Length: 60
Image 1 (spheres, rainbow, N blue to C red):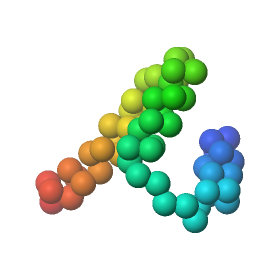
Image 2 (image 1 turned 90 degrees about the vertical axis):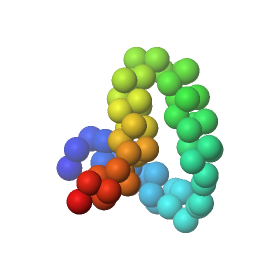
Image 3 (image 1 turned 30 degrees about the vertical axis):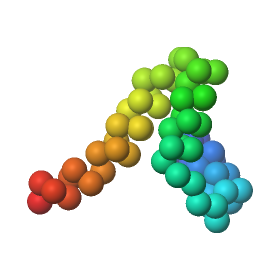
Image 4 (image 1 turned 45 degrees about the horizontal axis):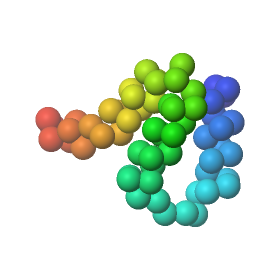
């Protein structure tokens, strides 16, 4: 198990039943980066990966 898995598991257990919009998620990611600028690159990579998930399906 990776260290980050604990955070993911906590997110699932605390908020797994909630529904959120992508606007809400984008706002929270931006807020996180504003408070923690050293994580800008990984957060941008995650956001880009999430944004392009459907693109992989179109190539097949």
